Image (cartoon, rainbow, N blue to C red; front, side, top):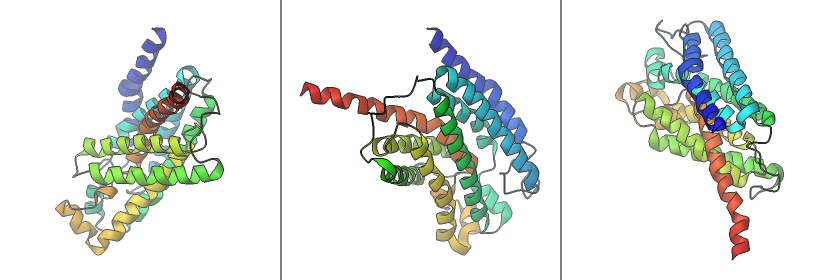
Length: 278
C-alpha cells in the first residue's frame, strides 16, 4: 500500500510540479516570428534555447533517477517523460514552424534536433535502468529471440519502423494531443517489439530505434514534399510522419517504452510456464 501511494505521489509531482517547471524554463524560447514556443534549433536565439533544453533534460534526469532508485526504472522513465511532456505540448507544431520559416531545410534542422534529443533520452534511459535496485529487472535468462549485437540491430530497426508506422496512422491533422498520443503509442509498441527481438531486458534497443525514427521522420517528410512542403503545411496535407516535434519524440519515448517493455516481459515470463503445462 505504501509503495502504491508513493508511486502515485511521484506521478502527481511530475504532472503538477516538475512538468510546469520544465514548461516555464522553455517558454522564453522564441520562434522565427518572435512568438512562443519554438524548438531548440528552430528559433531566433539557438544558444539560449540549447541551454534551456539541457536544463529541462537535466531536471527530468534528476527526478527520474531518484524515482528509479526507489521504485524502479520504469516509473523513473515514465515520470521523466511526463516532465518533458509539458514543454513538448507547448512547443509549436511542425506545420506552424514550416509556415513561419517558409523553407524546406527546416526539416533537416528538426532531424538533427530529433537525433540529439533522442540520443540524450537513450542516455537517460540507460542511466535509469542502471540505477534500478532490482525492482524492474528480470533475470538475464529472459531474453528476446535474436542474441547479441544482431538482436540490438534487428530490435532497433523493428522498433523504429513500427513507431514511424504508428505515427503515420495516428498523427492526423494539427491536433496537439493527438500528435502527442501518436508519439506515446509509437514508443509503446517500439518498446514491446524491441523487448521481444532484442537480446536483453534494458530499454536501450527500443530507444536506439526511436533515435533512428526521430531522424528519419522529418527527413522523409521533407523529401516527399519537396518544394511543396510549405504549401502542404498551409493546406494541412503534410505527411503525418513529420508532425512530431523532437520534444514530442523524446517525451513519448520515455513514457511509452517502459510500458511496452513491461507488456512484452509479462508475456515472455508466461512462456516457460505454458510450455511446462503442455
